[in-house]
Image (cartoon, rainbow, N blue to C red; front, side):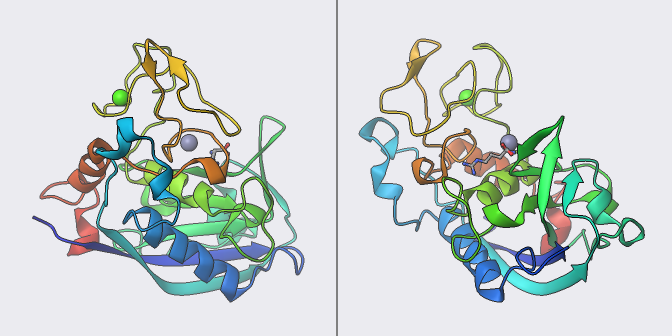
Amino acid sequence: GLGVINIPVVVHVIYSNSNENISDAQINSQIQVLNEDFNATNSDVGLVPTEFAGRVADSDITFTLDQVIRVASSTSSWPTNDSMKYSSNGGSDVVSPSTHLNIWVVGGLTSGGRTILGYAQFPGGAAATDGVVVAHNFFGNTGRVSAPFDGGRTTTHEVGHWLNLRHIWGDGRCRQDDFVADTPSSDAPNYGCPSYPTVNCRSNDMTMNYMDYVDDACMYMFSEGQKARMRTLFTSGGSRESILL
Ligand code: ARG
Ligand code: ZN
Ligand code: CA
């Protein structure tokens, strides 16, 4: 098998004031959360209900902080059009996307007039925009973080997308698949901190999965099926194989 897959990370901090210029400690806290969540060493993994406990995955994917790039910008609130990924727009250009995960940390993000926490590009997209974007106050679990999204799980969720995972409700009704067999079908996102069991589509939702929309404190697992879907990207011919080369 592939063994442990290590992903070098470039963090671009694009700030328009000192609050947005987050500390190295806050950046390091996010790297630690990623390492815990992708190796099932997160302290809350024991909260997974018995029904799903056998599906908890140690994905064997680790993250190493390779570089932090800090860019002063006049922009604080960014749209989700990838403009922060270009120095020509007051952002920061992608670094080595075939071998590195790029994370852009910005002041704030809006989509259709609404605040969002972060967004990601799926595998197979343009190299210049490959990576994830997270608002500064939802990045890491220490420093300038905003409850209830103060556990670093926004980046876990977005890196899940970057590794080809869909939302567990498949972004559609009950029959819409997330292409993962061991995540029960659901018809819509869950929010807040749902109690177990939460029943939709005649089965109990895996609301505690990182690919739902619940609060950070209420998501604490990837499934074995999701692990397999992520790791397929690194096999021969897979779209993230170049990270291992
Ligand atoms: N793209 C999603 C949003 O902005 C991320 C949701 C992450 N969820 C979380 N609990 N951190 O709404
Ligand atoms: Zn998402
Ligand atoms: Ca499923």
